[in-house]
Length: 104
Image (cartoon, rainbow, N blue to C red; front, side):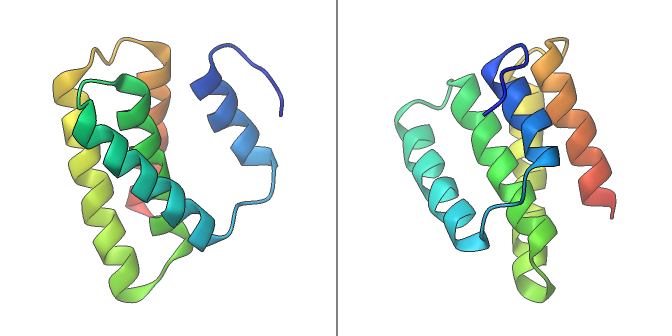
């Protein structure tokens, strides 16, 4: 895996140029992040990664599944905006990518 700046920034940039994971694999990760978030809701990395997994499932899905993950991702994005300082570069990247992906 390539390393560019912070781990989250690396993940976001590298995921653009590597093949997307299978939806089932992303859903498994989303479940893990959901469990972790319940035990530590103030953890920025967990919030961000949960959101990223929801957006990726949304983009790769269709129909009811896409609508479900669209709503989940929007709710996660609102929580990130309320809990964390969006002046951080990683947050801004997440926010910008989310707006772009969710409008499609």
